[in-house]
Image (cartoon, rainbow, N blue to C red; front, side, top):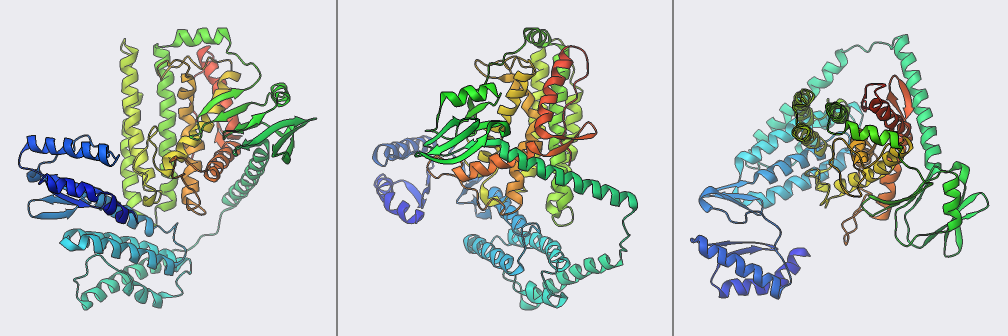
Length: 581
């Protein structure tokens, strides 16, 4: 319906452009204008902007430089124009490749028939749109990429018994739609036969490999792994019961005896004994609390945290906890010294290692079924490792700010490679092109921001409990009323506890199909906020490797805050927490 309404509403814009005798082309809500004179095109641009604002109450999407030279080429409607050349734009070409990667990802396809329908629909849609100018070279390249992906996917289908036998492979391949349609029937059949032969060669190689029985040591390790998993499930279950999360407006939270009560319109929804509660989180507006509840929570040392819809904690009610003067003095003495630089390098190195390990986690799982991800992730990991070594060689040369800027630069380059890998893990339809903290218009960035908000609150508690001053930081510059030390310390915990929780929601189970954004606000709807909250809390409650032991994630945050105090006192070296894969 969108193009239909655009054509009605923008008809007056067409009349305005025609009356002005502009060279003007519009398709739905996209339009372009031409002129031989720079001065005239600037005037046309101002006129159009003024008409849209005054008459239609619209404004153009932001574009740093909306003026293009025809001779140098330009992109319109996903098509690159230059002279007589017409090709699919690089951005749309990459989007088609990412869509093919997602559709042919063995982790996401369980029904061959359903997969075939979705693939053919996508291919025919692209073919209809771009086929008008026949980008033969690009269509053939898409087909070659699709053939490479189909090989691994059909091997996966046969290994898992999703295709009954080898006899079903050729009929299946003959039903696959391709981008380039000018092949003869014999060429098309030969293409499918060649692919089927490659698939059977992989399966025959599988049979030649003898399966060795598990050694006693491996069996013992497997048994220990099962026990750890069982213990983690129990801890997550207990943690979920210990977390009170209120995400609906109009809720009243009060106290009756030794129990916390949650009430809506005078009806009790839940009652929990204070001894079983660790945290109370309020993720909605219009929630009221009794003073008796606040008093009891302060006595039991149960913090009550208030979050915005973006997941940012904006207030915490808890018993008075203050930083220790002696520790604050140590923080000030360490600030902008060579010791502070060493601390910051270790913190950011820990973050970079955790990023690399999360990429390796997905690489290990996809190595046999996703050659595209395997190749690109491998290259990015090499560059990340090289940049990390550069970061670790940064020296204090008299000016702390210069060294800190170099660390920020290295961290940004490592993170860019990390997000390039993680972008390939999620469905391309979710619109996750890059990490965006402030203007998160897509589902993935909203989920990440919300998960980080939960981490901020946990780190903030640990910092205060350790006696640290949350406003005296070493990496981030001081900011009025901002806990910048919390921003420093949270860097270590983003990937193991927030990123992994979010990407698990998007790659397992329903794979993000049940996660939504509110169309009006552009933020997560209540149910999606609850799912992200639960996923992050589960990661914090589970057992993870730490210093040769299995420790609860949330406990590690407190240990690291205490380790920072010990480092400031000169009692130990600060070792960052690194999430394993």
